[in-house]
Amino acid sequence: MAQSLTRINNFGSNPSNAKMFIYVPRNLAAKPPIIVAIHYCTGTAQAYFSGSPYRQLADQKGFIVIYPESPYSGTCWDDKSIVSSRATLTHDGGGNSNAIANMVKYTLQQYNGDPTKVFVTGTSSGGMMTNVMAATYPDLFAAGIVYSGTAAGCFYSQSGGTNAWNNSCAQGQVRSTPQVWAKMVFDAYPGYEGPRPKMQIYHGSADTTLHANNYNETIKQWAGVFGLDPAKPDVTQANTPQSRYTTYSWDNGKLIGVYAQGVGHSVNMRGADDMKFFGL
Image 1 (tube, rainbow, N blue to C red):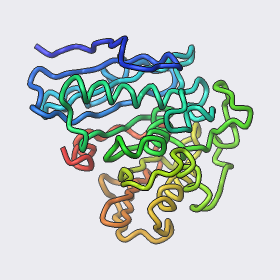
Image 2 (cartoon, rainbow, N blue to C red):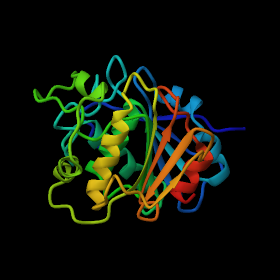
Image 3 (cartoon, helix red, strand yellow):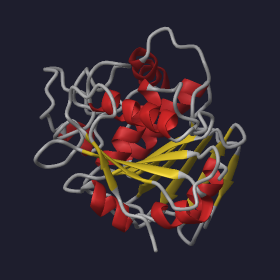
């Protein structure tokens, strides 16, 4: 019989009141990897638990899945935008990203988790937050997979608000250089010089909620972080991993972009491929 989702109330400092849910499979690995799976706007931990492939994969492979849940009424991250406040864009800044990092630290300690195998993924608002987690806590995560999100910092509210939908970003009008995008990542954790998670970015060409140009800007951001040229992938594969998808790879897979022609918001999760990218 399958295990169920469990609410954890006391996982550490949680100024933003984000909720923590966890799935621990019956056949847990001795030193389990951890995946953080972050839901979309209007979603919940339970909805993402039911609608994503990670529960079944956890049963097969023995890893733990953390399902954070937004504390706001619309269940977007940082309310309307996940990355609209300076707090969540700052390492240990007290925002939603801080809460999710503390969920990871709690799980590592409680279950003797493998600190070298902690991963983050999410869809839409959760995809945005995946970029933010990779930017603000590069010391925690080995890799991130973003489904239909935006670059970290794209939604930033100059007012510092946590209820700040950024139309310009959503419509793909926020454009910058790899260096400027990278600086947003570096500024999220000043002074950090350690390794950074490898990243995989999925986006659909027909996305009208978070315009397809957000794919380009996200690729530019991580290319800038890694010192790569976003216009010069090492490998380009048409019709990969399926028809009308094109996969681009930089630096032996440190950065991978998957552009889905004709696909809207949002690209379907690819559980088996996620496992390959995470090395699980």
